[in-house]
Image (tube, rainbow, N blue to C red; front, side):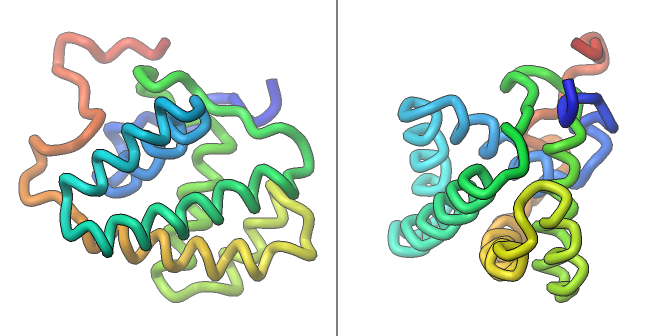
Length: 154
């Protein structure tokens, strides 16, 4: 299935990027998943900041999925694989929040129609800034890091 091909492992990317993928997966699971994302952000900091982050995250995912060239493919919440679409999503957000808006807009064209690429890059920059700022104090706080005994691909 195009877009679902594993291109990496969640434990091999930064903790904020793994959290981004986890929240993408939860958001796409529907209302229950979206509530989990909301609760996670509300536990992480001030309610106003959480609400702002959630609004921008929601706008980014809705824009991406509404103008996608094809349905986006994601792995299940517990899967340690990083799918191709998920990997492109992470790269868009990482580039945009790192200041490379033009690169993020170009990469957005891999998933969505080019007319929406700049808007996606701007939303991605805001989402990435929030995820980067959240950070993790210790490596063992990685949201999806498997134990050494459970490094199964699927």
